[in-house]
Image (tube, rainbow, N blue to C red):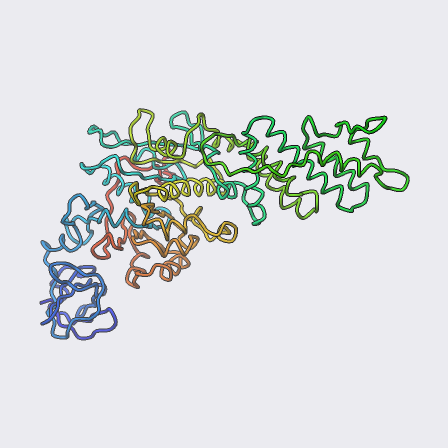
Length: 583
């Protein structure tokens, strides 16, 4: 017997040792079994002195199974013993179902004891991997994924998308598989001459996607985007219908200016400005307005007399009325036909004037910023990300996303976005995550096609931003709360967890905590993660590189894991200064 219980306080059991500390192995972090006349309990030794030890109570052992957590505690007469080495594997290691058991790493405290995770729980729930730079989180994640790839019963039904912030996982997952079970696909936001170029069809984007793309800051701008998308539908109609609709929009806009009651010079200047930018063959500044005995153009009708008035204002208004059409009704695009980002930009222009941007400077400023942003996008290299080579439906696009150049179904798709700035990378990651979530949600059989979305440097994307105020939701928070039932799961990898959305973090069920030292991050984790203990909080401050505290419903108990070094390694190693500076 290891010792005798002297004190019980909250989840700590204080024992006096029956043997001298000099005569036994190091007891720190070893597991003990405490048995009284009624029940058995499992605990971990967390503090040792020469004559005593403190045991952190983990759970109750019942019917050959550890039940994590406890409602009661051992009696003072409980027998306290170290758990036999041959029993440790059952406690912290293997799961009985081989197909559902995934090797994670080795125990640093028990020789040759492997630690496994429950695959259903690990990849069927949201998970998070945290650690400071150099703690080994990238290698740890790569090691887990390589262990998954090597399982000999792997099928093509696995769909894992990794948003690789620095392009560091390509080599780690591009593994040759002689069995033909595994296929890897790499996409990149830049032209590296090796991987496929990342590209998303603009006709698969909806109102919310364009709101993200154009960084909408006001709900009124959503109405303009909706009108623009409806315009796209109309503009794809027969040519005579397109002209009719464009004429109607322009005529209504000019009528609004004419009847605004503003000073004549201002009315004239605004109409000239509007018709210089928006016009058709039928309706422009040089359009002829026939009158008895002579003809005048619209431009000529805008002349101001000696009384500072536009005498022909009624003539112009009457001419414009013939173009006003009230029967122009259009639906939103449904992804069944293609259009370009330039088509959307053209449709947006007419949506802007139909919104009456000439009525006030305030309306103009809020609305016109959308035009400024779409023009900036069209004139940047990022526009190539929305130039898809052929017409595809949403279902066809997602299938192509997971298909390699050789026609194989890829289980892992690594999307390298290292060429994008943080702002645009965040937008693109949201759009893709939303696309996958909406697709999974639309399936007749719920969760029949699961997707795991892994976000490297997750604090760049999963933030407490303004999406909820503008759109009514944040896509990552929606996935964290609703994704599990549709089979869409998040994996968050970050060195700064305090910058993450607290909603997303609180919905994670499994954690791998590498070394964390920043007091703000440590405090944030202690408040947000519901099942974290003070023991884990203290332990993660001193975790050695390559080690992680694993806990959650995928693990039998919270356990320190020595992660294997992945082969091949991710491109995340530290710079060898001595090799560069010295001969």
